[in-house]
Amino acid sequence: MAEIAAGAVPSPNIWNSPQIYEIENRAADPDGLLEAALRRIRPWAGATVLDLGCGTGFHLPMFAREAARVIGVEPHSALAAAAARRVRHLANVTVRVGAAQAIPLPDASVDLVHVRWAYFFGPGCEPGLAELRRVIRRGGAAAIIDNDATRSTFGRWFRRWLPRYDPAAVEAFWARQGFQREPVLIRWAFDDREDLAKVLRIEFPEELAAAFLAEHEGCEVDYAVNIWWRRY
Image (cartoon, rainbow, N blue to C red):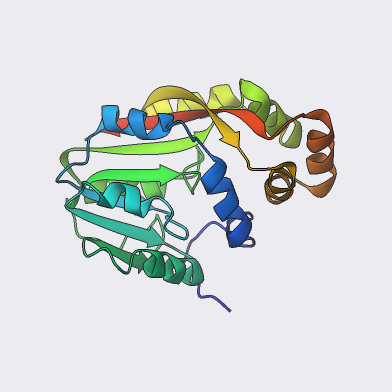
């Protein structure tokens, strides 16, 4: 059984179904819109990048192509081990087990923190935000990618799954924390309907996943996200 870093918030999709989450990662944002937005917020050429909640390390090679150093931190030890195997040939990348509330890095040691659908979901994540302030150097930035439930097909599905979710309250929380919002409309582009069905089943309860699949034609889904970001 995998060891889990203390305080970690369980992730029901990648923790339980990493192979299917790999399909989701490959399908997400084929146009590179998120990468382009991240570059506008804080370019990483020659920088030290922390990918917090890195999972199996899908995004680590992207940063490693230009960054001086890349650190992946993941609370689930089995996923961290998979991430380490993925980047074993990249000399400028390391992977560590740790949680957002206790990042295993020194003070003022990173230039960019990238977080994608992990831990920072609004109120309650203040301990992790305090850790970001600790580890980011002056002039560095944090970029946190999360769902935009106010628009897009995926946003509509998200609201049907969590009708009490309050996007306005989440936006107000991030504003109080000094973050700005960068809205981005990406898409999922799957090879076939079977892959779309597999991913829907790890993202939503079975009954809703079946309904969404029946309602939606094709292998692509428009998907709105927010990048919550700030410089330090």
